[in-house]
Image (cartoon, rainbow, N blue to C red; front, top):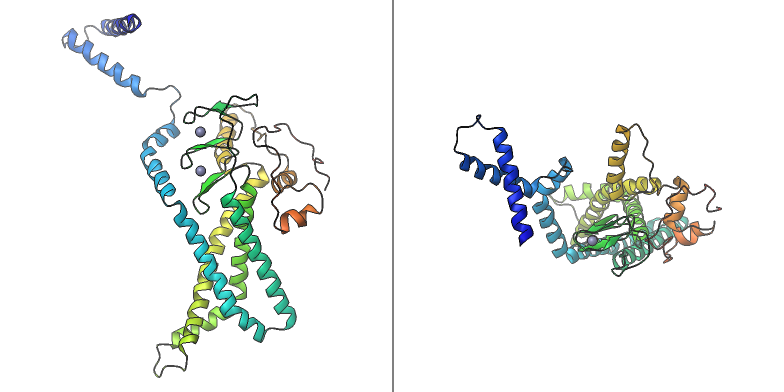
Amino acid sequence: MRWCSSSAFHLLRCVRLRLCSRRGQNRLPLWIREIWAYMRLLAKSLYFNSLTDSDVVFDSVFEPVFLTVDYVTRWFGLVFVYLVVILTSSIVGIAYVVLLPLILNTYSPPWIAWHVCYGHWNLIMIAFHYYKAANTSPGYPPTEKHDGPVVSVCKKCIIPKPARTHHCGICNRCILKMDHHCPWLNNCVGHFNHRYFFSFCLFMTLGCIYCSISGRNLFLDAYNALETHYQTPAPPYTFKDKMIHKSIIYMWVLTSTVGVALGALTFWHAVLISRGETSIERHINSKETKRMAKWGKVYRNPFNYSRLNNWKIFLGVEKRSHWVTRVLLPSAHPPHGDGLTWAVFPVKKDLIPV
Ligand SMILES: [Zn+2]
Ligand SMILES: [Zn+2]
C-alpha cells in the first residue's frame, strides 16, 4: 500500500515537473493541465511499448479475426476430415464402378497391369499417410521442469519452449517443431507427423494427376455426350450411360482442381523442407535475414544441413534401401530426434552415407 502511494506521488511529481517546464505556454488552469497530463500518462501506460512495430500493431488489430478463425476451425474440425474422406471415397468408388470395367474391357494386358498396380499402390499410400497424419500426435514439450535446452517461455501455456516449438491457438498448446495447424487433418502438423502430412499431400497430388491424365479422353467423350443429351431427337443414352458420363465429368473436374491446388502446396512444402525450415520458420528466417542485412551480416538458418541431408533427415533415410522401404512404401518409422534438442551446427555433408 505504502509502495503504491509513493509510486503515485512520484508519478504526480513527474507530471508536475513536466508541466512546470512548459508554464506560460498554456493558459488553462494548472489543476486541469495536471489532470489532463495524468490521464494521458495513464492512457500511454496501457499501450506504449518501445518494441512496438507494424507487425505487433497488425497482430493486435486482427486479433479478433484470428480468434474467430481459430474458434470456427476448432468447431468445424471433424467436418473437414469427413469432407476429405467422402470426396476421396467418391473418386475411388467411381474408379472401381465406372473406370475399372472400361479398362478391363478395352486396354491391353500390360496397360491393365499398370493401372491396377499403380492405382492400388497410390490409394494405399494416400490412405496410410492420411490416417497416420491425422492420428499421430505432433509432439508436445514437457510441462514439468526439465534440464533440456529452451529458448523462451510460452506466454499462454506458461511453460519453457524448446527451439522450433510454437504455440497453436486452435489446439491451445505448444507444438514441437510446429509447421501449421491443418484443418483437413483436424490436427497440428509438428515434429512427429510432418513426414506423414507431406507424404499425404504428395501422394494425393500424384493420385489426382494420375486420374486427371488417364481420364482426360473419357472426360472429353463424356462432356461431348452430355451436350447431346438436350438435343432433339435425344440420342439413345440410357439412364446408366448418363450417370456414367456425369460421374466421369465430376471425377475429372475434382481431381484436376485438387491436383493443381494441392500440387502447388506440396511444391511449396518441398521447397521449405529443402531449406530445412518449417512454414513458421520461413517468416522468422526472412525477418532475421532482413534484420541482419541492416547490420551488413548474412543470416544463416541453423537447422539447414544442406539440401540432400535435409531430405534424408526429414524422410528418415539412413541407408540406401530406405528410399524404397521408408519412402515408396508405407512406413511408420519415427522421425530423427526427439523434437526437444536440435543440432544447430552445420552437419558434415557425408552425415548419412547414402
Ligand atoms: Zn503454448
Ligand atoms: Zn493445432
